[in-house]
Amino acid sequence: MDSASSPEDAARKAIDEVLVRSGRRSDLRVRVYYQYPDQALSMVRLYAKAIDRD
Image 1: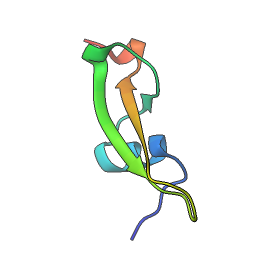
Image 2 (image 1 turned 45 degrees about the vertical axis):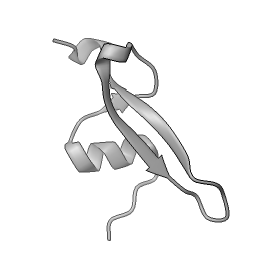
Image 3 (image 1 turned 90 degrees about the horizontal axis):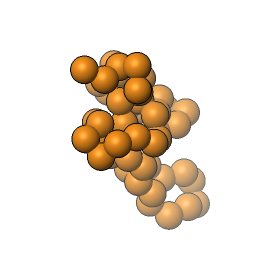
């Protein structure tokens, strides 16, 4: 099992894209669910970077 240091790192490893935590709704690429030891399950939305938009 490959681990990731952050939700952004997990997305990069999974889909080979560099994503950011803020952006337009239309640029939403993934939702990442993660849980650090002894903490609640969390989710972040990751968006395409402004320079990567088509």
